[in-house]
Structures are given as structure tokens and as C-alpha cells.
Amino acid sequence: TCIVRVNPQSSWDRTVRRVLKKCHGVYNFRMDEAGLVEISGTVDPNLLLKMLGRAGRKAELHWFQFGECSSNLYAHYPNGRGRRYQYSG
Image (cartoon, rainbow, N blue to C red):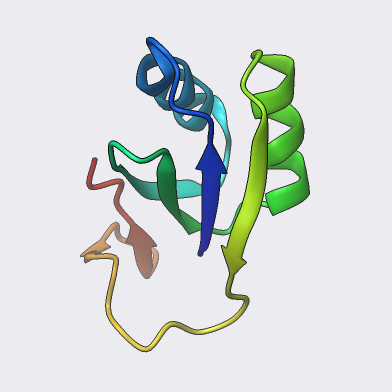
């Protein structure tokens, strides 16, 4: 889980949404009007910042948590071979 700050210019949310949907390991994300994007998943924050930079959106890492979360952000759904995470966005 990490929080990234993006410069909130015109159509920034569309660009960020497109990049995050392409990024493998992103399970869920939330955006606000101030340019803060909360991303849940197993994605490398450095890779995420690089992808946003290539898309023309300068971003900086605001907060990062590695390991187990204190709250249940993901819903578990059985798939026959155990459990998997479902994208809830």
C-alpha cells in the first residue's frame, strides 16, 4: 500500500487511472481532488512512479507501507486452488 501525490492538472485523473489499470499488482486505488492517490497492492512504488512519469504526470511518493495491513482492504474469493484477490475498483 502506498500513497502517491500527483500534480492535479486537467485530466490528470484519467491518465492516472489508465496507468494504474495497466500496472500489474495494483488491486485497488482511490483518488481525491488534491492529487493524492492511495494504491493497494503488491506493486513496486519505484516502478509506479516511473510509469506515471512516462505518462507525463510527475508524481512523488508520499507514504509507503510494506507487509501486512491492519485492515482488510481486499475481499477473498475462492477460485478452486485456494484464494485470490479481486480488484474492487
